[in-house]
Image 1 (cartoon, rainbow, N blue to C red):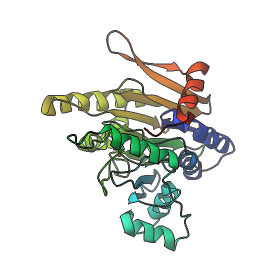
Image 2 (cartoon, rainbow, N blue to C red; image 1 turned 60 degrees about the vertical axis):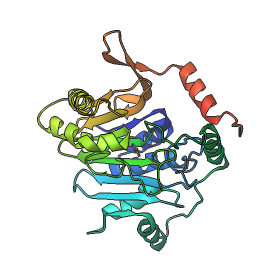
Image 3 (cartoon, rainbow, N blue to C red; image 1 turned 90 degrees about the horizontal axis):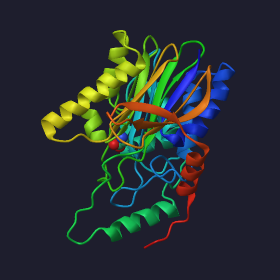
Length: 320
Ligand code: GLY
C-alpha cells in the first residue's frame, strides 16, 4: 500500500505528482519532497515558499522540516531567507549527524555551501498584500498577524512501508523577524514513525506547540487508535484544554496516516480542506464540514469549489 495526505487544497498538484511516483514504487522521501516543492514553487500560494507573505519588515522568512520514519532522522530550517526550496535543505540536514536544525544566517550559509538555489522569495503580489495590510492598520493599532495559518504539511507511505513527514511555511503574515512557528518543530508541526504512522499540523504555531499535537496523534495510533480516532482525541482534547486554561484556542488542523495507508483528519476551524491519494484513491480534495451538532464530516470538493478556489488565488490584486 502507498499513500500521501496533505493539508489544504494547495497541496493537490504536489500530491498528484507524488502519487504518480509512488505508483512506480518511488521512495517516500523523494515523493514527499517533490510534493512539497511543488507547493513552494507556486507563486499564488501566499503562505508557503515563493509568493509567501512577508514578516513585518517585508522580508520573507521560511520554516520547513523533513522527517524519516525509518531512522527517525529530523532536519529543520527556521527563518531562512532567499532560498527557493526550504524542504530540500531540511531533508539534507536530516542526514547530518548533528546540526540538524539551523535557523537564519546559519541555515543560509549551509544552503549556500551545499549549492541550493538562491531566489528572492518576495513577489510583487506579496508586496501588494503587505502594503495593503499596512494601509488597513491605523496609527493606533498594532500590526497583528493572522490568527491562523495555511502551512503545507504532509505524511507519505511508500510501497515498502517507508514513511516520511514534511512541512513548509512562510509562517504568520506580519510576524516579528525571527519568529519560528510549529512547522519545523518535531512533535508539533510533524512527526512520523514507519512502525506506526505520521501526523502533521497547520494552524497557529504558538498554540500547536503547546500540545505537541503531531506527536500525540502518533502516540495514540501506537496505542491502537485509528488515524481518525487519534486525530479526534488529540485535537479535540487539546482544543478544550486550551479553552479551559486560556479562554481560547488558535486554529488547529491535523492530518494523519498510519502505515496501512488509513488516514484521519480533525480540525477546530470552519473551512479546512485537505488532499489525499492512496493506492485505492485517486488524488482527491476534501472539505471539512460540521453538522448541526458540530460533528465533523468530509465532503469531496465540487468542481465549482475547485474552479472558484483557483480563480480567487490568481485574481488580479490592486494596491490600495
Ligand atoms: N503553523 C505555521 C505557523 O504558525 O507558523
